[in-house]
Amino acid sequence: MFTLDEQTQMVAGVIRQWCRTTLAPKIPALEAGTEMPFDLMKQLAKTFGFDAMLAGPVKKRIAKLRAGEVTPDEGLAASTGNPMMMHVVVKELSRVSPGFAMGFGVSLGLVGGAIVAKGTADQIEKWGLPLTAVQLIGSWCLTEPDAGSDAFGSMRTRATRVDGGYALTGSKTFITNGPGADVFLVYARLDDDVATFIVERGLPGVTVGPPFKKMGMRDSPTSEVFFDDVRLGTQHLLGGREGAGGRSDTKVSLGSERSGVPSMAWGIIERCYDASLQYVRDRKQFGRPIGEFQAVQLKIADLFLKLRTVENIVFRLAWMQQHRVSDMPFINASKAMAAQLAVDAAMTAIQIHGGYGYMEELGLEKLARDAKLLELGAGTTDINLLAAARELIGVGAST
Ligand SMILES: Cc1cc2nc3c(=O)[nH]c(=O)nc-3n(C[C@H](O)[C@H](O)[C@H](O)COP(=O)(O)OP(=O)(O)OC[C@H]3O[C@@H](n4cnc5c(N)ncnc54)[C@H](O)[C@@H]3O)c2cc1C
Image 1: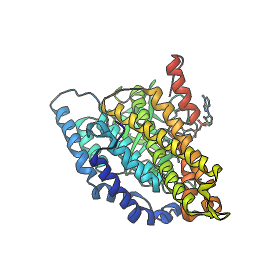
Image 2 (image 1 turned 180 degrees about the horizontal axis):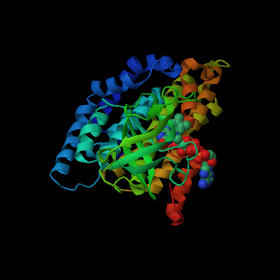
Image 3 (image 1 turned 135 degrees about the vertical axis):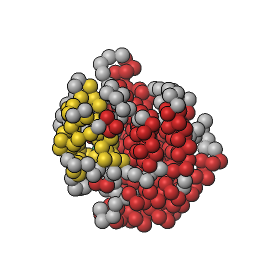
Image 4 (image 1 turned 90 degrees about the vertical axis):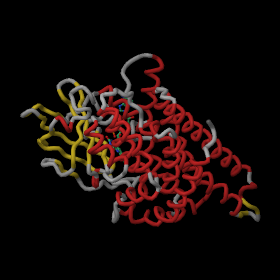
């Protein structure tokens, strides 16, 4: 359970190499917003055959649904038989660009994953397959200007029944991949429940705002998305019928979103640890490597423990996915902890590197800026911890 198999180690190695040669040189342009990351995401999936790896299980699910066999929803990660693989890919990407990892994970894992798990055979064929092959880019649209932590209670985006279909009106904000997405998975109020719609970019009434300027995750374009009387049919309703993509199903997606955060934290912390270990051996002050000073040694031990803690969280998440174990308190609480450890690790690494750590060139200041998002996105740390506590105690609703 606590080691990577040979195939996963091999994939980690080649992804690290791709990050070094292909992703890293693009970071300045991606951060400046002069280039979008979407073509790179497609290139990554094609280069490493993610499309082929996921197409088999996805096609099998389509065939089962067409044959009328009701299959238990299984996440994409579990269906590959090696959930650790995707965590390791996200970890490797996050060493260089947590923003790129986030956009890639949202499109493939969250949007593609939700459609594969909850969609009809036709929906999986039309949108699920190309999303998991990263031929299409997806956005996950839950948050609204006045509905963040209280995403469901305060939701104003609404679908109304018209002419045998639906009219969707409302707006979403802070939407990852918004500026370039082909497909939006949109949560909207329908009567007293929540329905999930698959909305294509070109439909009349769909507009997208310009990319926000942000503290971090600058290589992940984020925007508002507006829906003005967008006409949709039942083919756009996730699951093909009312009630199929309701509020309880959405929680599965929230769990999947939160399960992806520790692997991003893992990448950030691992890079901070590796860079710091090397630096304390090389950097000399007072005629000695700074690694000979006890205050610095304590920081290295602290980084090492953070690294192993988050690594173990990810191993447990992968084990849970593989064995279809649901443990939402663990998912929520460990997401919060991994996020905090990533922020702390980035700050510690900068401290170890002194003034050089503050400079853009080393990439540590970027990791610090990016890490902060982990404490906000996919539910804030307080909301994650409260959700875990409420479920453990057995009081109140959790989001
Ligand atoms: C870069 C970025 C990318 C994002 N990508 C997406 C995306 O792709 N799709 C999407 O749908 N959303 C996305 N989000 C939105 C994100 O999930 C929300 O920002 C997050 O859920 C918090 O909502 P909020 O920002 O409205 O904060 P608020 O809910 O307004 O919270 C403000 C503060 O109040 C606290 N608070 C609120 N309610 C409670 C309570 N009951 N008890 C205790 N404390 C409370 C919070 O912890 C926080 O500290 C993204 C956000 C960012 C910044």
